[in-house]
Image (cartoon, rainbow, N blue to C red; front, side, top):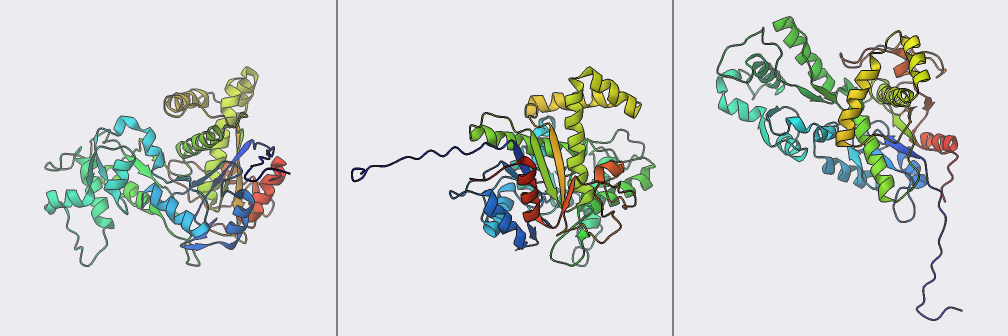
Length: 389
């Protein structure tokens, strides 16, 4: 019998996971402001009695119209889960060489606050530019939306090299650095069909620029899924969670759960290809095999440049694979022209990805297709032989 007031500590040996989860939000966990029923069911399996995740989890969204903490608070309120959210603009923190430059920001939400929050020190908004150069904006804002203004003023800045008092120079090459966040052509809210995403704005901007100059618009960086930069940043956060928990074994496998073939699945598979090539570079025989298969060795030095950037900002990844899991509760329509057999190559899919990401059937082929996020979690636990305590 224990003395009154004494405490008995029982230590339970909880197995350490070797995998982390990357959840898309819209179409996987919520649609608009409404939670998808399977989401709460899945988190009951992922969160312990203290409200802590049993495995490292990061929420990766292409949304960019609010501060990261605002999105995290919204998600926590809807689903009642801890927050670790990556927005489309989150990887801008890594691009420190631009942080001291004067930067024009265009987008939705509190754009000045967002830009300063990710590290930019000298920021100008479209509205500030309109007020300083009123003759440049011929849009009647009482009758029309802001989209034409943003397109007009961005093109003005690019074609005058930032000197808005001068005339356009269509031969200005190269143009000022351009960073873009969120390439989603479409996304899923409460409506029955997908809505236009920020990717439609990029399509407009690219085509207007080319029509005027005859040249392609060049991006210094594209962020948000399917960009590798976003997955690198997510892997870093997964690794950081494992370190905070003082887990000794590295997280070697990632599972990315999403509803969009062109962003979630393409991005996860692209990052998996990068991870496989990293492993291959340590093995001369694997490099020779890869060169023989592709007919080119150009991928190797390109990936080494990426490694240098990551090593300076985030340290190199511990993950060696990133598996893609497609759910049927969002953009993806299981009744559309996609083979029912996930092992078949998806050749008939219309490519809605960004201009700078070439269509590769293998990259839009999900590793697994399940009905919803609860089924996805069950599948991953089964794959990893993970039994929550």
